[in-house]
Length: 420
Image (cartoon, rainbow, N blue to C red; front, side, top):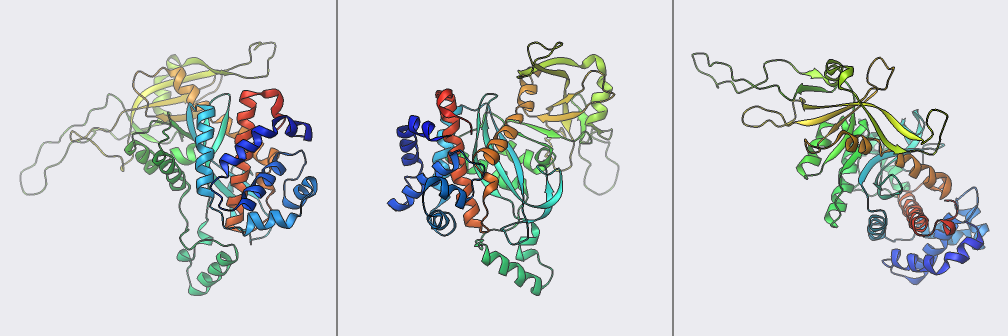
């Protein structure tokens, strides 16, 4: 956004900043938060502190102290941002995802050689988990967690010498003693629980196979009575919906009588879809894109899908008293001309849910890539050069504020919003 753009929305931006940063105790903190927010949205290639300070005409030490050392709490700020984002977007789903930022060296908080979908490989990076409010037309992050690799958890060190070195790195990066390694799905669940405690509730939770393949994550969502559409691998085991457990005849003698169980071993999801055959496929259009062509003048995003009722068969899934496993939807994309399905999802939606609804929700994750692109290249999520845990969370919170403001502005006054 250029200076003219700020002039056009100045009062609205001041009101937004006053609301979002009202929890900051000191007036100088609130003022600097507003300055930093403008710096993130102001035109310029780099959104690190020195370039922003030069464009804003302020001392970069002021920004440095506010982000790195000032003891303000991100939690109430993020709660306000989540409420404003949900009110503006009216989400059709909450999407869980994670993103990586390549980093040099090993001294920044939670940097390690680890897999990043952003990099498409194992690399030296930070990884953050996020939850987003999403529709096909708008989306915004609701909360963040910085993923801590095992190498940053002194409790997991093999020797006292290595544990002492980990503690040294943690102290230098201001990592609280309460923070330890947890799987990404647990970080996502913690954020969902925090949002639920505030009275927010997702229409449905959507995530990729990194989360969907984790049975514990699916069960935790079910325990919270949350519907989901989660990507899985085709190797996930399941029984057909019409499979029926049987109780073996009891043999004479002592011992616990056998309980009911399925007589046949489970198949995997790929085999179940292949067995249903090509005749079970349905052509579904899930949204309209922006690129038209001679064979697609309406820019329809479409493919062929199969939807079956199945019973996922992981051993950790609780069974009913009669031995039955819960019934769910299995959705598979099987494009015309492809020899086999390319993608799979499990959905806990009601049995009468139309396949078009399930496909649209399964595919709604595309908005998150749009978010990450805007957050990184537009408002500088990847441009933070500090090393501290506190600094990263402060910066990510201010970046989220910039993104939420621009998203709200784009929805109400597209001509004034400029480019994020």
